[in-house]
Length: 473
Image (tube, rainbow, N blue to C red; front, side):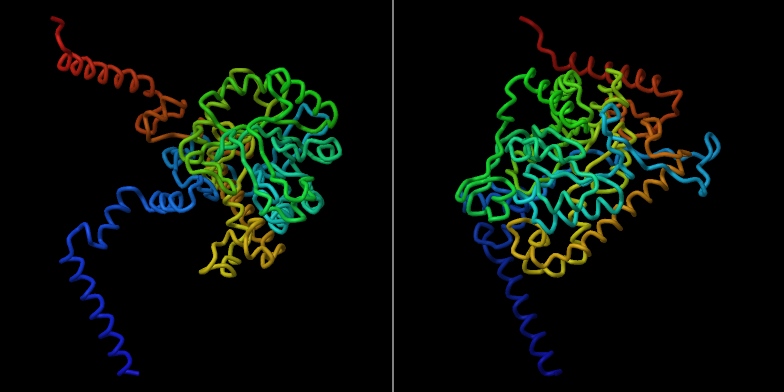
C-alpha cells in the first residue's frame, strides 16, 4: 500500500508540475489559463449559454428563472421593539390566515399566506410532482395553482384549495373545468417570460399530457401571446364579470410585473377582479429564453411596492387582494413582501427544492435534481410523492414559524398587521422611492436629511455644470 501511495503521489506531483510549467511557458493565446479571464469577463453562466446557442442555433431554454438578483431585499430590515411598543408575549398566538376574494360569493381562506406557485403539469412538471405539491398544500391549509394547463384530475383530488389558471393555451377555459376551481386566475403573463408565446413540441407530449390538454396526437401545445378571446379592454372586463357570475369564486388577474404596472392594474380594477397576482422579473419557469428572464420585466421588490401604493391610492386595499411572486426563496423575503403590502405570496423554485430535498441523491451526481420533477425528466418515476410532500410541509411550517418570530419581535399578533412602518432601509434611494424610512437617521429627521442632501447634491451639480459648460460663441 505504501508503494502504491508513493507511486500515486509521484504521478500527481509530476503531472501538476508539468501543467504549471506549461501554463507559465505557453503564450497567452495558446494557454489553457486563457479560460480563466474569459470566464471572469463573460461569466460562467453566460459562457455556457454562448456555447449552447452556438451548438443548437435556437433560443436556450433555461430552467427555474434568472440567476440575476434584481430585488434588494437585503437592504431592508425589520424594526424590533422593546419599550416603545412591547413585544408580543410568547403565549399569544400569531394569526397567519388570509382570505382571498372577500367580495366573492365563495371567498377562499388560507391558513398561511404562502401558496404554491403556478407550475403546469406536462408543460413543466410531472404528475407525481403536481400531486406531491397539492398534498403538501392541503396539509398546511394553503392553495396550489394549476399553472397553464388543463384540469389534472389527480391534482384536483389532492388539493383542498385549488387555483386554476384561465390560460392563453385555452386548456382550462371551459365551464366544466373552471367550475371545479376554488379560485380562477386569468393568466396573461409571467415574470420569467413576459407575455411571449411558448410551445411544447409534440415529441415531448405523452399520452397523459394529450389527454389533460385535449390535444391530438402529433399536435404541439401552444401558449399564445394573448388570450384568443381578449383583444380589447372591454372584452377583458366582460370575461372577468362572466367568470365571477358563473362561478362565485374569486376571479383574479396574473401579469408579469412591468413599468406599465399602474395602467394594467387600473383596467383590472375596472373589471372588478377579486385579486391581482404580480410576478416579478425574478420569477421561475420550466424553461425560458435567458433574454426574457434576465432583461424583461420589473423586479419583485419594486413591483409589490408600486402595486400596493396604487391599490391604496384607489382605496381598493381589502377589497382586492395583492398576491406577489417571483424569486422569493427565504422567509425574510416573503415577510418583507407582506409588510410592503402583499396579502399573500407564491413560491415555486423554493417549493420544488424543498420537495425534492434529500431525494436529490437519487439523481446526483449524473443527473440534475430537476430530472426527478419535470415532465420530461429521466427519473420522474423515482420521486417518492409522500416523502416529497412531507418535506415541503416541514419547509412551509419552518418558514411560517420564522415569520411568527419576527412578528413577535415587532409586537404584532398577526402577519397581516405588518406594514411599511415595521421596516427601515440602509439605502437612501430605496427610502426615497418606496417611503421606507432610512435607518441612518432618526424618524423625526427624515425630511431634513433629504432636504439637506438635496441641497448638497444640487450645489455639487451646479458646480459641475459651471465647470463643464461650453460658452456660446
